[in-house]
Length: 159
Image (cartoon, rainbow, N blue to C red; front, side, top):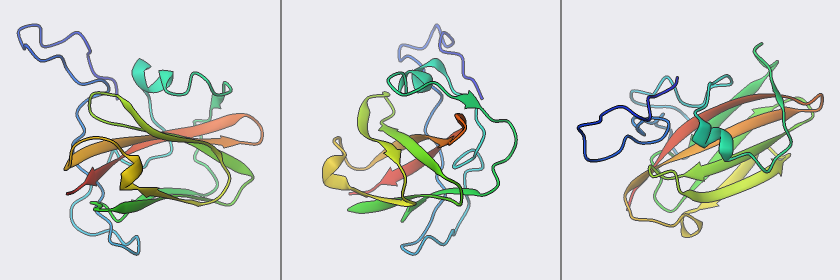
C-alpha cells in the first residue's frame, strides 16, 4: 500500500512516511494472538514506499518473489511489550532475514542483517525514544536463490 507523501497541503504537519503506525497484532508472552489484530502486519508480500526501500540500500539487491513462501511466519511477542520483545521469523528453508526498526518519524532505531536463526530478542534499552511509542519493523526474508519476501509489523512499546 502506498501513501501520498505530498498530500495534506493545508496540514502544517507533514504526513508520516509509509503511512501512520496504527494497530498491532496483540500477542502474549508465549506468542499466542489475542484481541483484534492489524491485517496489514507481519505479511510475506508488501509494496514499500521509498523510505522503507532506502533502509536496505546497503544490503544486496534482491528480486521480489510474488508467490507465497513454502513456510514463513513473522511475529513479535509480547506485543505490546514493556522491557523486551522477541522477533520471530520462522521458516524451513536456507534463508536469512534483514530487519530494521524505525519510529514514526522514520528514524532508524535498531537493525540486524543476515539473521539465520528463527528468533531475535530485542531489549528496550537498545531502542531509543520516548515511552510509550509505536515502532515499525521492516523485514525481508532472503532466500538462497536471491529472491525475497518482505513485509512490516508494528510493535507497541509501553512504559
